[in-house]
Length: 220
Ligand code: DX5
Ligand code: ZN
Image 1 (cartoon, helix red, strand yellow):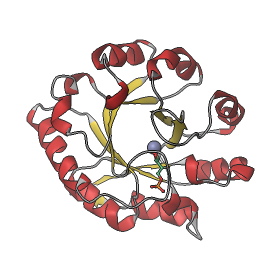
Image 2: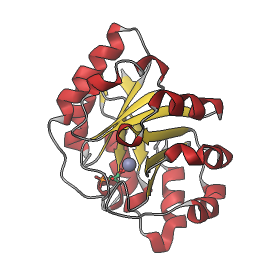
Image 3: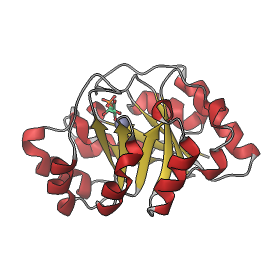
Image 4: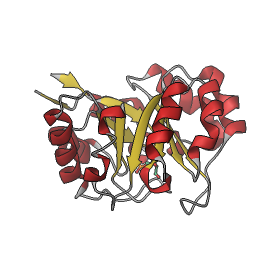
C-alpha cells in the first residue's frame, strides 16, 4: 500500500506564532509544507508574500508546495526558485499561455503543477498533462481556509486518475480545500496522491495526530 502525501497548509496556522507552527510541521509526518499566496485580484483575499516567506524559509525543513492564487504567477518564477520551492502551482484560470508557463517553471528547476478551480474540468488539461509533475484540484473556491468540501471533486479525481493511467504517466494528484480524515478517505480511494489540509490540522487539539490520520489513508 502506498501512503498518502500530506501537505499542511500554513494559511490556517496562528500567524502570531508561525515559528511554532513550522516546527510542529517539521517534527510531524507531513511530507510537504503547503504555502498559499493570494493577491486580492485572482481571489478575494490577500495572504502573504516574499517578506514573510523569506523570514520563515530558514527554519522550514519540508519541501515547499507553493500554491499561487495570483494573476501572472510566472512573473515570479525566479524569486520562487531562489526560495528553494519544490513545486510551483499555477492556476489554469490565470494562464493564457499555460504551456509556456510550465516550461518556465521547469527551466527554473522546480516541479510544475497546474491548479484547477472547482468549475474547471480536468479534461482541459488533456494537451499538457504529459508535461506536468502534479495537478492540484481545488475542492473549495480558493481564497479562504475552513470552507466546506465540494463533493463533486471526488469524481474529478477519478476522471483525472483515469487520464493519467491511460497514458502511463506518473503525474501526482493533489486536492486542496475542506480536507479532513473523512473527505480525505474518499479522495484517496478515488486516486488522490496528496492532500492539503489547513483548518483540519491547525484547529485540531493534536495537529500531529491530525497529520497522522491523513498519512495513514492508503489504497491497496
Ligand atoms: C484555500 C487554500 C487552501 C486552504 C485550505 O484557498 O488554497 O490551501 O488553506 O484550508 P482548509 O483545509 O481549511 O480548507
Ligand atoms: Zn492551497
